[in-house]
Image (cartoon, rainbow, N blue to C red; front, side, top):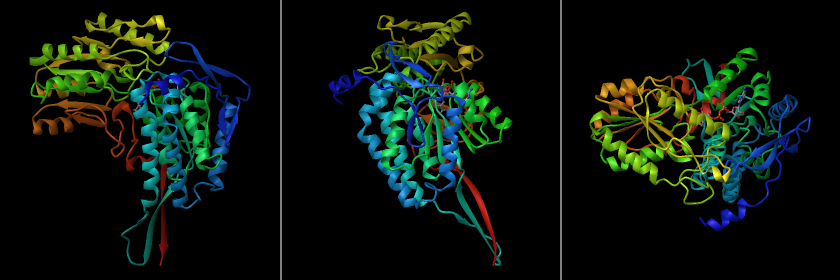
Amino acid sequence: MDQSKIDALRSQPVQPVSHLIDGRQVAASDGAMLDVLSPIDGCVLTRIARGTAADMEAAIASARAAFEDRRWAGQPPAARKKVLTKWAELIEAHALELAVLGVRDNGTEINMALKAEPGSAAATIRYYAEALDKLYGEIAPTAGDVLGLIHKDPVGVVGAIIPWNFPLMIGAWKLGPALAMGNSVVLKPAETASLSLMRVAELALEAGLPPGVLNVITGEGAVVGETLGLSMDVDVLVFTGSGQTGRRLLDYSARSNMKRVYLELGGKSPNIVFADAPDLAEAAKVTAAGIFRNSGQVCVAGSRLLVEASIHDRFVQEVVRAAEAMQVGDPLRLETQIGAINSEAQLKQNLTFVATAQQEGGQIVTGGQRILSETGGYYMAPTIVTDVTPEATLAQQEVFGPVLAVTPFKTEDDAVRIANSTVYGLAGAVWTSGLSRAHRMVQRVRTGVMHVNTYGGADGTVPLGGVGQSGNGSDKSLHAIEKYINLKTAWIKL
Ligand code: NAD
């Protein structure tokens, strides 16, 4: 990738963003807009429509009409596949523009954004495009005088609410299977990461997705997100974000039409390093990358390092060295390994967690402070805190920032007990040369995904979902499709 191409795009003005309703760009019903601040320098980048309840209701009505007249669900699978494939191609053709726009909005380092955002979004949409004409219904093993058919119907109108850390990747995890199965979608991006998703939605229209099948409403979660959650006309809510908002969505469902709610929430994922790890130097580097890339704003980040006591000091030193070698700064420079924190509020929250950790006996061995404040942007040094007890706030609560909590353990049972001692269960890793130990740890640590001798990088062929308060249901792989279909039985007397 050529830095000069990125530099040319970064200086282009960003047009204000309206909602997308019924295939048209529509301003907020009261004309209100929200300023979008770039985390790179804290300056106003552009403005987005500040959606009202009426805007959201209009989007839901449009999605419902599109579903009921079957303008999408009624098309032959081959036709839907063609549109989605074209959409993936358009995302690839606009990859650099989308990545740079997204980085100016949310602060992720560009070398990661290029892969994880347009690249991954296009791959996801193509995956479900290719899958949709290979999914058969079933014939039940009934007695001979009846025929039992099991149909896989679309559910109807899907409400999708998305966070700010990887808007295109996570957006595509919802949109790919939802649209492939013939549903209509109303999408609500995060306030601080709407721009690239809106552009991707426009590309869907260009690819031939009929108007109304995908509507996007920008604005505040407490207003438009709540209207979506409480709607009597939304059949399924799919969400990625914080546990706090996840609870609200369950409540909205209970207070309205009992719509299905699938939650992908936070984590406090344990990265467990045994003394018999095959390559401790490699483990240290991957451990640092596994928590510090995208400034720790990764749901599966390995935010707890559990390290066998016999190698604790030596291993921590290696991780500190790896962390200090990582380049923090302008996320639009290709050499940057750790970009900006998404917002000033998030940066303040990270620093509060560090202060609390110190009050509870944690020792900061590197980082701990805001840096590069002269840029006006929101940057934080990668931070490692040792002497964190399993009960400490830093071991129990998700920071969603570049802060690693280190806790020693003595035995395998000890490691499992500490690993399983939070309310979360999203991801984790074990580093060991012992094949049996690796399998035992995969079985015993309660998570949705467990890595062995690596951290992160699982592709679209495997599911990602949490257990406990990390959520329910899965994104990615063919399993994600289950969220977007209803099984319908036809019982036919012969
Ligand atoms: P958040 O819950 O604050 O916001 C997520 C979305 O919910 C945003 O679009 C927001 O506008 C909307 N929202 C906020 N209040 C709402 C309300 N009252 N009603 C309806 N919608 C509302 O989360 P965030 O800060 O954007 O994202 C960070 C969180 O997301 C972290 O906890 C992180 O772990 C989690 N996350 C999880 C995964 C995963 O796959 N499990 C992936 C990425 C991020």
